[in-house]
Length: 445
Image (tube, rainbow, N blue to C red):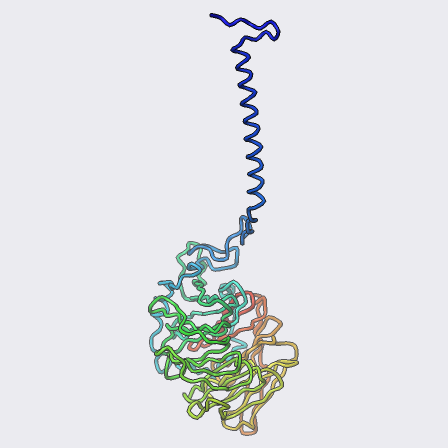
């Protein structure tokens, strides 16, 4: 039977019921929406703010994937980077170092008395590479007879390797070698050492007291010792590759035997931080140390007492001493210090009265270290003018003298070379490093 329309609104009972259902459903939906908005607002205010990303959109992270081309950053086309926390070393770099780590022949002991660095050294554009990402605090050219590999440590704990003779597999390789980078430390790398008898085992130390071993035979690295204070200097015993001498922030000199994994002896050698340690090239029991306490000392490790040891010789300077290095023959000792100006004191080991003080006000960085080259006549030091001074040393019966002989300057060396390292076997291979992570390799023309 058909529904009859109401004369008042013109709707049938069915249509009137439908309208009431629509109004009731709209009221229910409005209530649900209101509660949903209230709940969403409560969640939004309670939710913590999302941390800002470390790298802005479109910017590459600091540690990209392996085998990536980083030309835009000024890096080598084959800048091989492992994962940040990986302890594995590249097989290609390991094979290069282990293959070149053969015992040096007797004639490989470098002597270059007639080498004229000022005339023969040049810096090629291809020999400028950014090895690490921040300021380089330590650097070493590895003692490989027929290969050039530079190791550089920066203030972030990275150690980068530049295999200058390596061949890049990248199609756009420019023949300037291959770069690798690892993160063995959590703080600035203070020193890197490699023994001539075992250059495949590389030790390093850091400001957090870590001493690490990068073993390229095992293709891995690990921490071998953790010291209680920042470690600023490191040296291997001449006759024992795994015996390490290190100097800390407090002026203590410590012998660590990695073979047994423990400290053998600690000497109270200085009153402040020890900046360098080096053994005499001809006497395995004699070593030289430099310290922030304004002294440099020569020691005989056979007769050193633990407390207040007696040194063979103490040199007192006007400012903190940055380094004390023996000449290649061991006949002289060069000590660098800095007060108002940079100072180099050169002493004859035969007669300490024969000495010379060489000053250059305002031309050297405060943390400079003078190094010897491949003979007993040339010293090298970085200058604030983006160059390297060559200081000529002469000793004879009448005394000892030193003077500026030449200066290495190139348009390609665009910043102050604070760290220097000479190749132990290749005469004329001088590596310089700066605060931007770059290494400049000077070679013979």
